[in-house]
Amino acid sequence: MSGLSPDARRLLDAARVADRTTRADRTRVRAALQTRLALSAAAAAAPASASLLVKAVAGAALLVAVTVAVPAARTPPDPPRRAQPAALARRVSPSPAPTAPSIAPVAPAPSIAPVVFASTPAPYRPAPPRVVARFLRPSAIASPTAAPMITAPAPAPVESTPSAPGEPDGLAAELSQLGDAQIALDQRRGDRALRLLDAYTAGHPQGALWEESAALRVLALCALGRPSEAREAAATLLREAPRSPVAARVRTSCVGATIPTRIVEPPVIP
Amino acid sequence: MTVVTRRGAPFSFLAEEPAAASATVPPFDAVYEDHFDFVWRCLRRMGVPEPGVDDAVQDVFVVVHRRLAAFDGVSLRGWLFGVALNVAREHRRRAQRRGHHEELREALEDPSADPHEALARSEALRLLDRLLDALTEDRRAVFILIEYEGMSAPEVAAALGVNVNTVSSRLRAARRDFEGALSRHRSRSR
Image 1 (cartoon, each protein chain N blue to C red):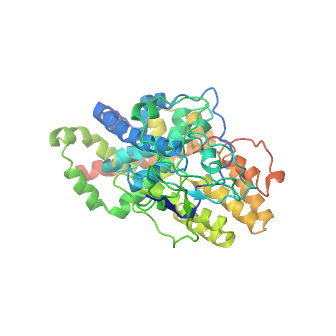
Image 2: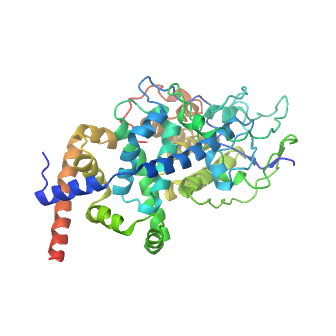
Image 3: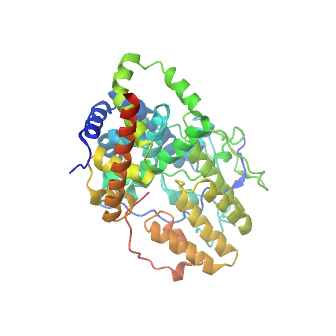
């Protein structure tokens, strides 16, 4: 039963009739989406990682490599695999690495349609945007004869890469901010990481990457030796998003033993 | 050329496998084909300006591509609406930052727009959007999903993560607000 007046009902009916997309709309958006996801797939297929957002922000042709300093205890080395979020982290060289990771050129973007729309339904392994936008600059281009990756000794001041037209600059901004927090964390500057995460939360209260932010917060609190707060943050995250891709990582943090592995799952609100 | 990168970190805490998809997770292609219209409509009715809706739809499906494995198999439309709701918020904020003038200019300069067709097509939609603007986001979401999209209250409750009673109360309030806005509009038009 509607409960609406006939006038309101007529308006809704008229609007619904008019509210139709065209084939051109579908085709246009599909093409743009394919491009974005193809860039993501190409980046994920590279030995070093780059995200679709990063790629799109800085330009489709850029080749990128990112070194990650991941404590061995946190992320044991594992052979790289294609298009898997975990591989983005495992692909990097834990310290000390038996062999330095080398940079190969990112493969040209695969033909678009198979990359995007022939995706395997299950198990579904989407390639998430996990790399910080500002890593991708013209200077961060790999050539076919690329030398082993050079790791800059100290991060430059935080800055953001302007978004390219059509890029979801909100997501790029989120990604950049969380990347800054990750860097701070890797530098063992948990206090700075927390400040950055606070700023992220204030700026993006409904951020698309809130799960990642929450997971970073847990890790930062662990790094600062504040396990009770870390447990609280972890519990919140796992309660809200028990099947989040970051949940497993949180469970292996300092709070792991205290967090139940199965939590009653609320309705999914991405 | 030598590769030079900063010491940085893609989100290295993602060192674990993502949750495996359930058997009920549809392929991405099917999700796109079957729900493109729904996503588009929801974004527009949740206040994403016309010039930005292409980008917003892309944003939704980028997130869907990334998180489809986490879909619980209960209500795909509800899940998609949850994604669209977050994306719509961000795009509304962005539009506000850019200012309505720029949005309007872009709309007017849209070379693909047929003025006559656009006018006929958009009159009802424009009024609808104006009336929807009188609703809070919570009420607006419920109103759109139930009154416009024809979803059931339990489905909406699952989509929004609230109970059915909350959905009912929001719907009542939304109807009241919508009718009030419509009535005011009619009064001004006379």
